[in-house]
Image (tube, rainbow, N blue to C red; front, top):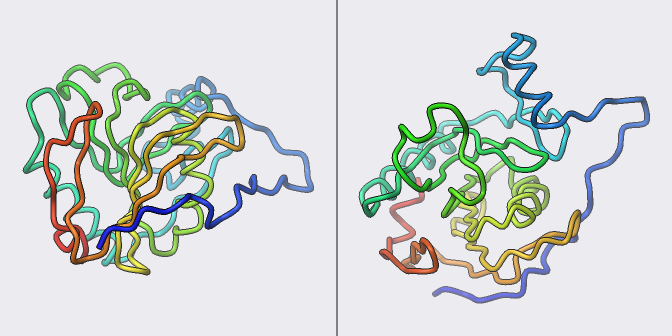
Length: 206
């Protein structure tokens, strides 16, 4: 049974600042490093709030869950949207690569740029070892960007946490509403504030 809950389970604690001098990067600088070959597209890092952060290693369960979520969402996409998997999205100071995202328009529209918040209907992170990062840092970044719906497919507790109503308040950005869906529930897929389908949570879990 779905549970509506106030989103208060974890304090929004900013990442610790290193004790030695470091350099924070803008999105433009990050792109320039990619163009110059300083970073390769397959390097295991992503830009989060100006920091180059190592990506979590994906185990077989994580990989399968990502494939299942993409497959389910692909099967219900209305015209005018498409599903990406582990592709970059460009935010003001970050360029995360969510496990799955629903993007407005056709793929060809993004030949020369990555999707930005106005193009994004839903982001999904598959969480096992990354659960803390997904619940705190990434949730804050997605809320600050105004991404309307954020799902965490929580492999630890075998449920999907759905966050809506983003509230942008700098480092304290968060979602006002959280609803948890158990494996026996159906979860609504909402795009542009309209429910387009409901999918069984068990179909999203390995």
